Length: 143
Image (cartoon, rainbow, N blue to C red; front, side, top):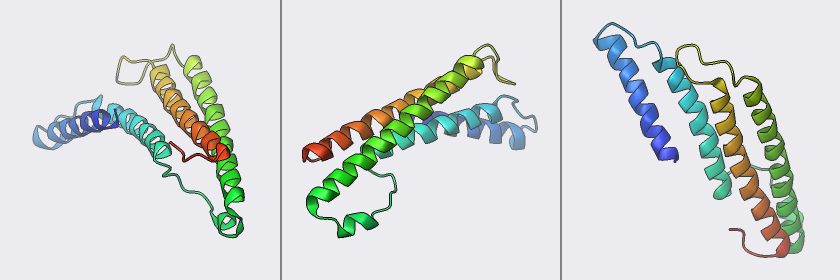
């Protein structure tokens, strides 16, 4: 999914460059479209990073805790992060519902779509982190 959004973003930015600097007539919607695609790409990438346990965290306590304490701490951190991302997803969905009837400046697309897609990506992240946290607490290798 991220690769498709990245290719689409590259095409939009190339069209913007081509129209502005080669044809000397900028296409109006490309800047806003590229910005929205970049936001979407960032959140899809963050969900992918959660799947690969690529988010940063402070690991100072892991150095001094025994193995069972490390598993409990990792599980707690993952579940706490999952709760946070689920809450932010709910907030993004709420904002999306409030701006659903207003369209973007240059595109005939509702602003609610971008917030809804961001909320979906945040929910994917929360789901993955919750599964990893439960796996840590069970003593299993996280998926």
